[in-house]
Structures are given as structure tokens and as C-alpha cells.
Amino acid sequence: MLKDLKLAFIGAGTMGEMIISRLLSTKIVEKTELIVVSDPLSTRCLHLEREYGVHTTTCNIEAVQGASIVILAVKPQVLASVIATLKDKISPDALVISIVGGVGIASVCQGLNHPTVVRTMPNIAVQVGHGTTVWSASSSVTQIQRSHTQVILQALGKEFATQNEHYLDMATALSSAGTGFIFLYIEAMIDAGVQMGLTRAQAQELTLHTIAGSVELMFQTDEHPDILRNKVTSPGGVTAAGLYELEKGGMRTVISNAVLTALSRTQQLGNMF
Image 1 (cartoon, helix red, strand yellow):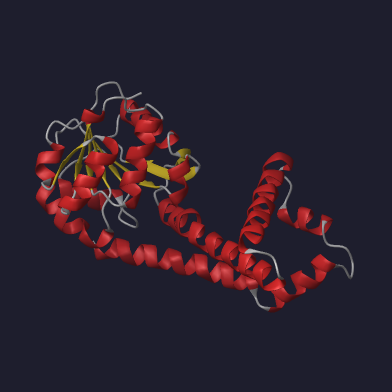
Image 2 (tube, rainbow, N blue to C red):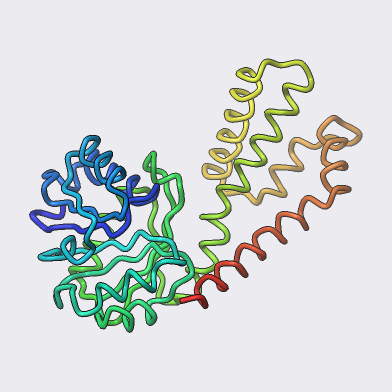
């Protein structure tokens, strides 16, 4: 629990709303009046007021007044203008948590003229409490503020702290963008099932349970995927025939290139600020 700490969300997009929803549903924040959200779209503000009962405003400066924790949840492309309006406006004792992809801690600290900044990168699975978030903190972040960060991120799923901020870019490419790659694979599997003659509902259920079961097996056995793959690959069998097509199509290389390209784009976005 964050007791009676006021939280200010700067930006009310998809990820910001997911975090608000999780904090309230898990009772990490019990009083809706402790959350203030700022967004330039009044329609967006109205939606959040009706859905969650939080306070909203279209003024970033108004939102951060008296806030103990400020969560930056805006796109990298607009961060510069947002930070410019908030420079020297955040309480010196407040913690700033950034979920802005690619933008480093030093840049946020300098832009805000504020030393206590945590950089995070959650993924879309936070919506159901199974997110993966890697985070790193500036040297000025206190132990209590680190604890507050963990409380917030644990409401979203698994959190991993690192002293090496460079890992945040890699986490963005692998676990954040990676969810999009996995959804594409799932979609392709479902489409293949439909092409074979299954209904879309049947294909989706089979695909999802197959993937969920495979992941759970790896968690419980802690075996290398190569070992598990070989266990289901009989010589001249069905799996071997399918794997041959995947390898012929360069699946490993395509996936690797997708992740590396996502990493490059993350770094480009960071350089824009």
C-alpha cells in the first residue's frame, strides 16, 4: 500500500490507464481521490473520471501539485514539450517514474531539473497482472522510494531491478515489443487452424492452451527449450516435418532480426529527446 500518497499521471493513454486500473483493483491505492490524471484530451479525462472515479485535468502543472509520485506516461515524441512545462514544478521530495520508451534517466533528470527518477519499461500484460517490468533508478532515489516503485510494479506483474540502465533498451525490444511478435505468431497459428477446417474459436482455444502449456512446462521443468523441442520431435514425424518448414523459412533469423530492429528503434527514440 502507498498509504495516503498522491499520484499524478502525466498522460492517460493505454498503458497509463492499465496502471491506474491495476493500482485500484489490487487496493494498492484505496482512495480514488489520491490519483490525479492529466491529459490534453478532455474526452479522455471524462472517460477516466467515469470509469475509475479519479480526478483529471488538462493541465500538467496542476496535476503534479502536491504529488508524492509522478508517473510520466507519454509518447517519446512529445516528452520534450511535456518536460519543458514541468521543469522545476515537481516537489523536490517527489519520485518521478518514467514509462517513456528509450529515454534515459539522465535526460529526464536534466529536463525536469529533478534528481529522483526511476525509468521503467512495462509491457501490455500488466492489464491482467502478468506484466514484465524492468526498472532502474537514479542514485538520488531513496530506499523508501525504491520500495514504493516495487509496490507499484508488483501490482502489474513481475518486476526486475537493474543498476545497468542499458538493459532497459533491451527489455523494451524483448519483453515490450516482444508481446506484439507473440500475438502475431498466435494469429498465424489460429489462421492455420482455420485453413485446416477448424472454427476460429476452436483454433484459438487450441493455440492459446498449447502456448500456455508450453510456457508452464518450461517454468516447472526449467529445461532448455531445445531439450523440450527434441522430446516432441520424432524422426520422420509430424513435428519434424513442420520444424523443417520453419527452419527453411528462416524463423530464428527473422525473430532475431525483429528484436534487434526493435532495439535499434528504441535507441533512435531515445536520441530524439
